[in-house]
Image (cartoon, rainbow, N blue to C red; front, side, top):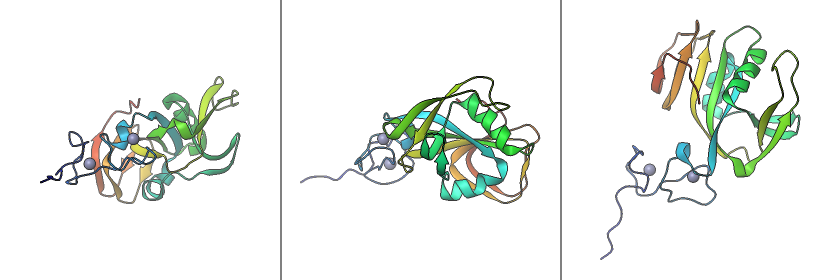
Length: 181
Ligand SMILES: [Zn+2]
Ligand SMILES: [Zn+2]
């Protein structure tokens, strides 16, 4: 008699009580041995924006740009660049830098020329064209405030600067440093 598996193959890190694990990043993998955050097809990339967008992004995901420099989709960069872009978008308010696992098979990589007033040099950017193939793992919040409750039960929130979280926060973990990598 065949016994059915009680836990998914990702059981060492998966808290769910299920027999199969679906990795959002892998194409057809509905029986994955890893979490999306550890997906071997992905790399860790960052997306910076202003702090007022945090709750809508945690609820609905990152909003694809309709017309970006190299096309439509979601733009990612390395942490330091994403922070510089977020400060530009924050216009002096608080900023948010989302740490994501991104399936690079669905990305177009390109070199962005120096962005005057934003970055000091040219930088690599990744355009994710299949806008489902990523997972938000964490978010760094620098300065500013969030009035509403935050619901991010499996993710990590890094808080720094004068950032104030005024509502209730449900997160996997809250840290008081912003070291994203
Ligand atoms: Zn699982
Ligand atoms: Zn995967």
